Image (cartoon, rainbow, N blue to C red; front, side, top):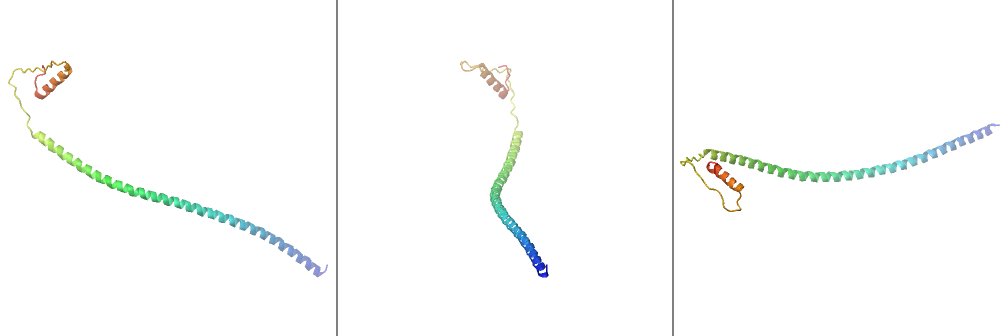
Length: 151
């Protein structure tokens, strides 16, 4: 083989190697394009998902803010009500003290009975009056007026 044939064979081998490398590059390019499209789709999905989640969180924030304002109003009403309750409690305490002092300042009624024996007839001749109601009336008389319980 002469030199030119050797060069031709080498050139053909180089061309074959370049074609093989070109085929590999085309395959790699196709894989990279496919991965890029998948990544792009995944990125779009992630962005959409994050935007939806952000909208949900914004709605929750609005709702919580609204409820917070309502609770603040209720809290203020309860504070005012509590203050009124404390004032009422103080007034009741003062009224109680006044009543205690008033009752203590009265002298008890003293009754000196000069009778040797007081007899009151509390019997009722009507059939509607029972003995039980008569005895309760007698008990009230005894408690109120200090008459003997032998009525």
